[in-house]
Length: 279
Length: 279
Image 1 (cartoon, one colour):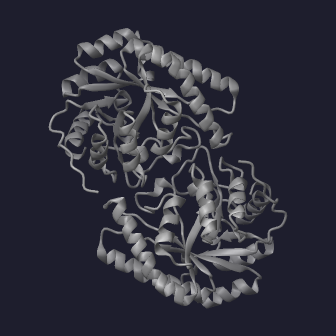
Image 2 (tube, helix red, strand yellow):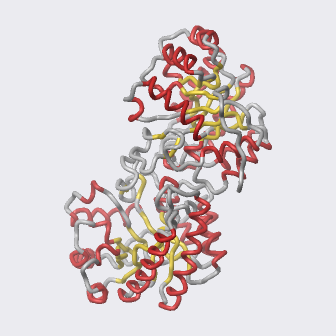
Image 3 (cartoon, chains in turn green, orange):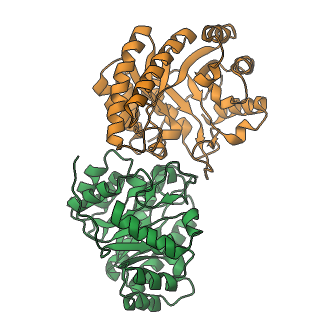
């Protein structure tokens, strides 16, 4: 069980999700991230609304940041056929947006619908990814399936373990489709280390997301903690993904009503501190 | 995937957990359950405070009800040795209480401690059960390990899948230690049907708990729904446990701030209706 990690003495691998500092516009986020020494940004699509996407892509580049992912596509599952068709269309738009932004990959939240069995949602997810991947491969944009915590199995994801995501990737069989490993969703799983190794063998760890599980957690959606603030062994899981061959960006993705009310520069300082100390 | 269940036309297998009607004292619960046609009761230990346990046991019997389980023992995991010792003592008391009450089994909530790795908690849980089981076997009280939803992995249970509970039972290797299958905790698991079959083969399905997962769920602890109110395929999972050989009580266990504020007789009527229609 003993694992070794190199301390994160610099921020060369630090990426922040734009939603983490939700009160900031994308323009301010780019400026402040760069100033603070953040090197990567994962852009949430809502932050692009009303903007020229290529202009935002250029701003990111000029600020010295790298676009890590576009977040998020997916939500393939629905009991209604028209909704599934609409989701596919939206996902094809996401592929275009990623290409325009210069994002090498899209994070996929698989989706679920409480009106239908999980098995049906899983079938629809896989079918949706296969269809979306035709366009994504052509555009040179990778797709990362993100298994979500089982507490989101009603409306957000019928894929709740890394094993399921690995199985799905193997069935799809495209080098363009991989996984996003998010410690918040997966930390509890007794098979996590093994499945991370399996993802690594398949060359399919496309993303690594960090935050922490606050104890107690006050809200199912918006109470994520800073690394070190909760009970997730973040650096242990980082060691596992690195042993599996991953050396890409470490993405801080925090949804928190609490932190969103704070001065965002102060919050960004805390993120950098938590990154160096507890990641 | 197709499964058959016999409709629950009568309430001969209906058991209610005393905590489900939390505003009622145990005496009123016994009286009202019996009057409504409930046949079994699982008694929560807090309901016994300040009572002679043998008297409560006699009241239950005289009302024509059967004690299904004592709820709950467990919480074996702690970073502090003194707390683990205290937990063991408390669990030995629970064995005595179960014997006094006439409960054939105790539901075990395994426990977890955010201050230590999940692996440590799991080891402590298994060690604790082995020790407790010596007394439980002697007293003729069975122990049911209840895997809890992964959203409780911080403080309530480091055992979060039925697979883990099955593995643990097999390692312990006592016919006196089995599992409690609770749809709320396990419905999302893609391996659930297989693991239920495995529990059945081992002759270790000691309890079956039902309620529903509300969508959205407003609170991590106290927002469980009535069967049919959420997205859990309750009757499908019932079919799985019955195919695995289980034909015992079907236990309604609902923690709900919403239902606890309602007139409890009205709520009990709704439970019976949901039992017949959606279980």
